[in-house]
Length: 329
Image (cartoon, rainbow, N blue to C red; front, side, top):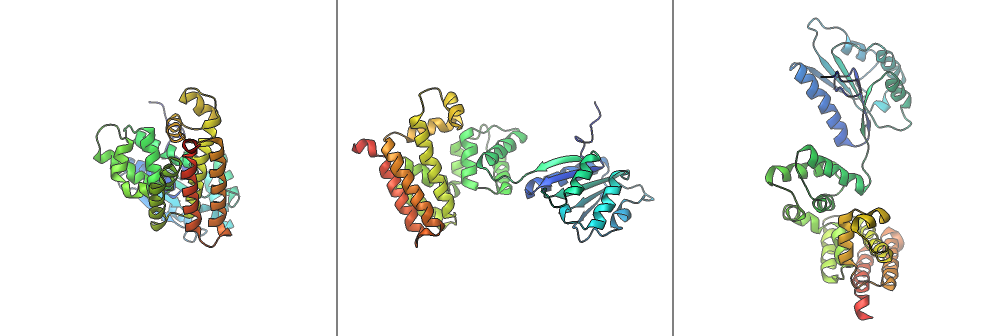
């Protein structure tokens, strides 16, 4: 077997975990600790904050031991370390101690950048832990979780899980683990619906789907449930905007296979099929009316109106009516 390089080996002398996604930062630490304890079950793990890592503490922790014990030293929020400690760490990078693995958790950005640059220059192993702010990133995360667990899930199931759970990666990872433990075979949208019905119904995207399908009563019911369970109004207007824009994009696109349209419009192929079903009954005028309704609701929930709930209800009803505009024409 080829020897791992420092960038691949969890037992590299120094590991940098860079980013602000707590789940990924914790996983980076767990990976190093697991590798260390696999090599030596008696590995000593020290988990420190900047306040605990005073000048001289690092030298004490990394000094040779009579028992030559393996250690993992974890330093959290390394961007907040004082200058004297950073200077000490930079010196350590050039001559790391044997049997010691140093893990630095750094938020990234300009603060403490000198420490990052020094560690990288010294050849530290780096693990990216970026905050996942985009829905597409969270969708990719869910797909990756299923792959890691050796299970297959349909694109619709992955999207339904993201819609139902939201942006918390820990909850998404937990949901994937539960589904893979409980369900045999390919996990599909129906399975996700059975497990997370209440949360899925509270999803802002469920409100949007029912509205653009012209199902006003169901959209209003989903809206009220969403608001009652704490979904932010701005998330609902965002979902409504995405739903109406998707209708507009697809209705103005040339016909073709879902894969071709997906590339042209920047949508996954499965979503092309869903939007095609939703766009029946829509007209260009209806799309324009719906977009104006969304804009008014967005202004209403961001402080331009006295009653955000009424603004959302009005938008949902207008969008549902617009979805049936072809039939009325």
